[in-house]
Length: 468
Image (cartoon, rainbow, N blue to C red):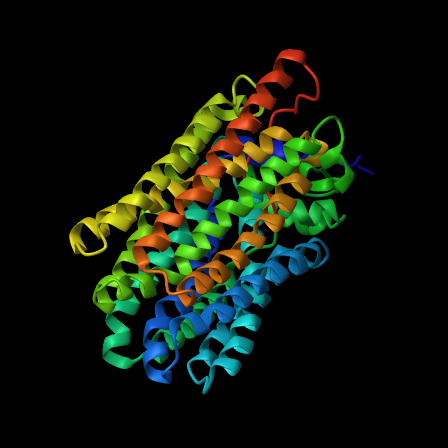
């Protein structure tokens, strides 16, 4: 009997040319990410028309926005562990169908109460899809282009918001607010059918749970030249196979680092989800037409996509140096510059609310700085934690950060209800963005001091965005 051959699955994927199977898997993940990003922002586009149609103040939709964002937190925390048991593919398909069906049902909501319930259920699906699309893309990408591939999928969510905004600007005036929920429900169902037929399970996941036969079928398609047949077992890198205890986030002198990192993530989500939820309404309040208000929100997403891709490009070229204290200077510098740019141009937005052309330009730059920096803080999180705690560290930072996705829309509703004008509200948003810059500065100083003393230096990060 021939001896069992042992194959390092990560090395095989990293060294083999990118196969048709990998391209198909990543393309389907990108398509679903675009639709996920579009559906997540539909309610923000619809609020001005809903307010007029139902005779309600815009502030009365604050609870709807907050609970929708909260549902995404629940979905992310719920379906992460489920995916570790069921697999990425099943959870992606399940969650896509979930948010599609309830988005489609939202078109027929007769009241705010019913719409809240439907958006909560859709939000659970949206929250469950995102981390698993990132995980599957990461596990199918070779190390040489992993950060770029993951960042493209993340940027796809911003692209979805951009395309959704363009569609909303055309559909709502012509067919009413219901039309965007119909489109947002039907399109993902169509792509889910394609994914059911063509999206493979993660080979790393199959190997990690002991299904070496299933993994062999996938790996033979990825690297036919490796001659994978017969008795083969796969070894899986520690990032995939190891579950890191939460206490490691606070061990080795990392407690303050973890707290500072969480503060940045919370602020990041707070500002971005405030803008997602209230931009169209605030621009309409400032005198912009409904179509211009939605177009401006769409351009925010276009800027975010460009910013995220820029961060990904830098990440793959700096490589593992991001994980060393001295080499991580570039990551901190780029993200702090991004947030500073965002803060300055949020102020510019407040000044140009009456000028359509300048408003569209400035809000696009705000998106570049704010949403683009989201990819950078994931890379920074990867640099802080050792391999044994990296997945947990990034996952918990994103989960805690989503508290900001609830606080942002709630804060916006409170400010509008208090009678503040759009200019004042935008100027106030400079404050948390500046706090994020200062917090990152403090975290950077701690990492530099850690590098000089050699204490608690994290191992190099294999893939900065490999969180789920």
